[in-house]
Amino acid sequence: MLEKLSEKFVDVMRGIGGKSQISEKNVEDAVEQIKMALLEADVNLRVVRRFVNGTLEEAKGEKVLRSVSPGQQFVKIVYDRMVALLGDERQDLQLKGPDTQSVILLLGLQGSGKTTTAAKLAAHLKGKGRKVLLAACDLVRPAAIEQLSVLGAQIGVPVYREDTNDPARVAAGALAKAKRESFDVLIVDTAGRLQVDDALMAELARVRDAVHPVESLLVADAMTGQAAVDIAKTFDEKIGITGVILSKFDSDTRGGAALSLKSVTGKAIKFIGTSERPDGLEPFHPDRVASRILGMGDVVGLVEKAQEVYDQKEAAELERKISQENFTLEDYLDQLGKMKKMGSMKNMLEMIPGMAGQVDEESIDKAGMRREESILLSMTKKERKNHLIIGPGRRSRIAKGSGTSVAEVNRLLKKFEKSRLMMKKMVKNKGAMAKMMASQGGRP
Picture 1 (cartoon, helix red, strand yellow):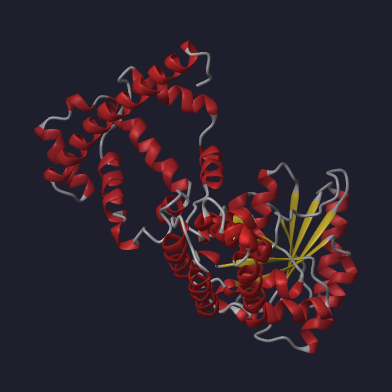
Picture 2 (cartoon, rainbow, N blue to C red; picture 1 turned 90 degrees about the horizontal axis):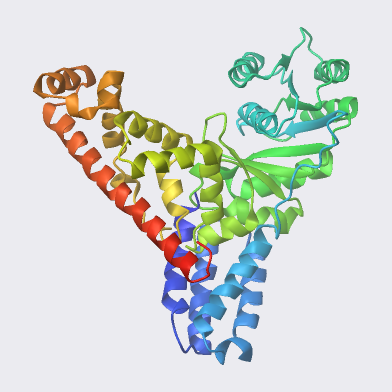
């Protein structure tokens, strides 16, 4: 996400960040490059001017130019201003307690991804322990109701639907069901149009008045850039919105919408769509996104992703297996599956400080990872538990079953042996470091 913008900012920060001395000319040149990067990213012109003027004024002060590390001070100024631009702090959903109903109304134009976002939001809230009901109130787009029903079945969330042409009636019926059956969150999917018109706004106003939502969230396509900001302003004026969900954020290489929305509309981005999968919705953290744009990574986000698929007991068991050389191909296959659950390899690598803009999509051997998984799945459980029994005959059978060659099977087995040794050394070194820290009165 935001690849092009991040590449430009990383270049600017790298050029000035390590300097022990900088002049006003250095600052002016760096700010000019930042201005061009923001304009190319389709950021609102007034937002760019305010950002640039504020950065220039602060960075040319004596506090920066005469500080011990002026380059780093400049980077800090840019980071702080970027966080402010994106919205300062994480804005969570303002839901009522679990003993009453909270209605979330999703708004947006046709094609913005409202229906898939409704299902993703339902999955997110279900994971937080909420009892969620979806309401199919898009009665305009063909197959919208069916699509929501299929998505609801996939995530285990019921969908309320009625055979009527009145979306307000469906919304009211869904709210009645939510109260009757103690659903604490009702998510209402509404119709959109290709453009804003009076008929759409009148329909949405009727749905809004039928359910009195605590959150009215605009689902905006991040790829539309500045258009998303204009759409948000119109929906806020006509219906009233409490926040924005940027869909297709993983495909937005520019970032104009994300960097302009809060400043222009005053409405916070609450979630971003990061993939088409049911779990492809993430809370929007301005500080983390700013950090990634500037090439500082997002270690907290990476740890949180890992915690979603690894619990402490599993991690301890894995460490024990590695240290005792009991790590098997079965465990290796399990780790591949967990990595896939964490999302795009490219996105994960870019969360590591210094890796932004350094990762080329082409350089990630996704096909190689798929081949490895295919080879592992073509083995019997007994073979994965004890790779030493995999002789020439078995290797030939595994190669045929996985559509690969014997050489590729051999390569995987050699890689596995090397990985086992390397992981064992890492675990031992960690133990030795812990002992050393303890002996010196420190904490590991």
